Length: 446
Image 1 (cartoon, rainbow, N blue to C red):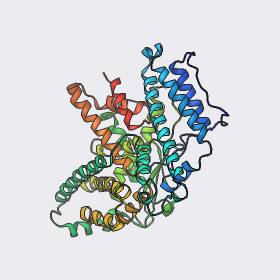
Image 2: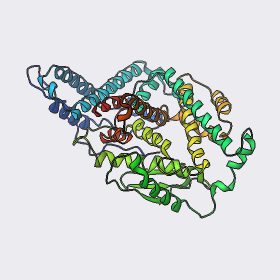
Image 3: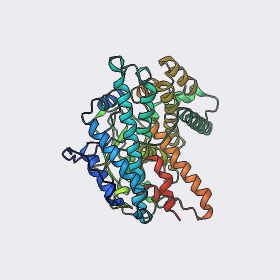
Image 4: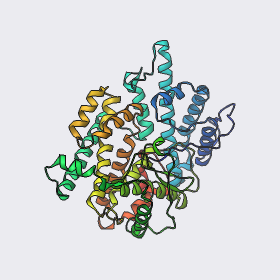
């Protein structure tokens, strides 16, 4: 999982928020500058806490709510005026994108301030339960807000349930196909025994360092199939010393440009090598983050928080290209990716079920067992995760599906003129964006 980044370089808080009189002229650059300056000064867009209790607590304890409201009202007034400004007819692609991004951030702030007022009005009876957001005061409203914040696109619970179900069915079909191809058709118990055997483990002091380096070199030899020529260099690959303190098999540190593999369990899984490299290194988090810097389409960036659905969605999306990039040489390598596709798909259903429909622990466990009996060891951890971190786990699947849907739509629209390299270039060159804006950037493709 990519570590969440916090916007740094906070400026001293303004005593007042800039306003523009009805008689003054305002162009797009001035509006964007006004927004950026006050956004930073007010400390907006900071790090999102994974825990709903901590994140909501942070919002409720904000000391400058009145200043945030003045900022919001002022920018809304300026935005209305800007819609009628003559300069609007000369807005560049980057400016249009920045305006849409500001619209998204302001709408999110407006919803935040409204929800805080509603919760505060409940007085002493209001509670943020440690038993789940569904058992908290205004639980459904908080879940809707956190979903919009994490997913960066409007998604109704019913739509998310349907998406999760469709993706779970899709992944299960691929899992069964691989099971048959590996010679275990109809032999689930034997297949499970085989997959848990030592043949898939790095035992003792052995590490996957050499395998990761070899595979990364293979990926870079095949990148030209999916991406335009560029000078992005591979990340460093190092073992992590965090171990069980960070229960993941790998992660990427953007400031160090390093992919770390992490032995969090007694043994390291061989089936996780290929998909994890694709997700965390190239063409996943490392490649995506460097591309947005080195191939940037816009010289300036807006200050904002971390758009998890874009970054994690991209990382999950590129896992499907293992074969094109020279990986998935064995069925078991692809099976590892499919197993995690199953987990990401069921997370969507569990997240909505637990946090919106208030499923009990037993309901969640029963659903997991009915769908993924082959992965029993992950059930408790994943159920706990989605209960404690509402909506965050959906970002992987929703983002991946969005990228896939946009690609398929472009293939249909352009026909023989479609070039997947140009599509990926367009998706990456503007840097991280809310998912709701990705349709707009496609308009830049001829």
